[in-house]
Image 1: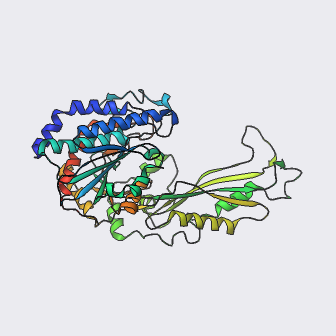
Image 2: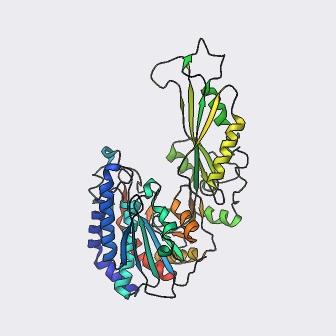
Image 3: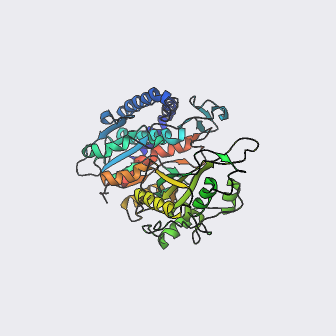
Length: 460
């Protein structure tokens, strides 16, 4: 079977690359209204390709936003059902002038396909479909039942798509999700990505006088909103970088010794990290490594701080207002709504006298996600990687947020195996995004192999 699958894949690589180029050439930018028609075109293209791969009951499910492409293959009763996730929307290409070739005119150079979405997520997604198509063509059947959930608004936070997880529970019921929107630690470095951080945020406004006033006439007689804001935001952390919001760490799942051992095996050069960011040193919560801070500990960051005169020259005023945007990345067991409550309480407690302070809760809350190390899917991924690379995988987390992983667990009761083959150097979200053709080919083989390993899995 393996040789037949490999032969099918090898003999069709030219066609598969042409298809990927066609897919990438569709500017399916979900963030820009002027590309709404292109997003619909990408959904149509993908639905047709899903049918071509051998899936049945293919439909574009309406969401109130962009459609979710659904399809299924359900012909092995008694076997597990896998829900495959991916997304067909992409980031804007700006700044276009920084690209070496047009972002939506894909071009192959030095074994890489350049174009917006080549890596995130069209290359990985198409590779997954091709991999399952190869199994069907070579074996005549899939080893497990498969359903597809392919959305078109991941890059804008999935404001409508994730609602289907609640309204279409019966259609989407499965034992586990395989998420094709994953990443490898590096070329030839197989990776099990076991966690994502959640997110919560607020915006703070400090108001003083009803308008900007003369700093000579009024300075020293009223509280300057910028001074008040500076004191307020400084109160969020202690001198060592630990978050000083009361109750912030109460629900945090500690980093276990087993976790530390596994995470510590991932290659990491701190000096290279520092040099790459052009900073003088790392900084953060005492008692944790840089990767532990990024992957397993929560954060509170100032994203913006402004007020008063911003132009050239000087303008001697006491400003009327000051503003700050604050976001928190959350780890397992922290609730985003609860975090907003704690932030509001902290601001109220530390608000300086003589000014009016208000807090607005930011939308776009996301729950954190943690895949248990003893989940059988972890062993299935590890076995697949060993066959592909003849080495053990690295175990890492992500400091970022992918809301669908937590949403799958909350709404469908299933964990997600994040299984993708792009790498961190592929200019994702930046000019000159690319996907290695070698990774494209490896991914095709890998998705079929993973299905073989999931034959005996059940909901955890």
